[in-house]
Amino acid sequence: MVRKLIILLMLIPALTQASDSLRTVSEFGRKIFHNMNMSDTLNGSDRFDSTDAQRCVRDAANEVGNLIGVEKAKSIVTTAGTWGYEVEKDLNSILAVTIKRTKFSKPVIVYPFEKLLEAYSQQSSTYDTVAYFGCGISGDSIYPYPIPNRVDTLYLIYRGSGTKVSTYSDTVNLSIKYYPAVEYLATAKAAAIMSRDATYWQAYFDKIVGGLK
View: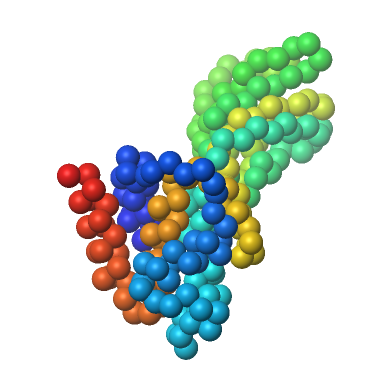
């Protein structure tokens, strides 16, 4: 499923038409019924109704948002003796970190967590503790090294998950170029419930690839 979605995200931007408004979860739900050639009613069928459609949209929008990520900024105040600091649930990646103390500021190198300690172990025995050697990333958190022994401020630029949607009236706050990915993934999820997954995935891939010819 993820592989298919990645291919969709690569192909869709070239095909997407401009739009002057964002869609809600409910509006995407109506798209599902249209794509599946089903009546858009509150009751739907015994196997699939509007509630099911909107649930598929919610899940698809959150998956696409997690996959593409959204660029964000955040400041973290360190505490003496505290090593790990959560950045955000579903953290995608850290793009840049700067440390600031009074008038002093400098960029901090960001390492994968296992590389942080490996690189530090290769340094000489003397170490200037005025600034951090680097920051390690593990899961949703950042780990400045050495462990802070004072109050500092770390300024982060990172990629986090897209805006989560949970209710039917929520707006899918992603770039409209990713709207087809949300629509197609949601429809595929709906088709799976109706035991029509393979047919609908193939139909959408044919439509997208055909549009590039």
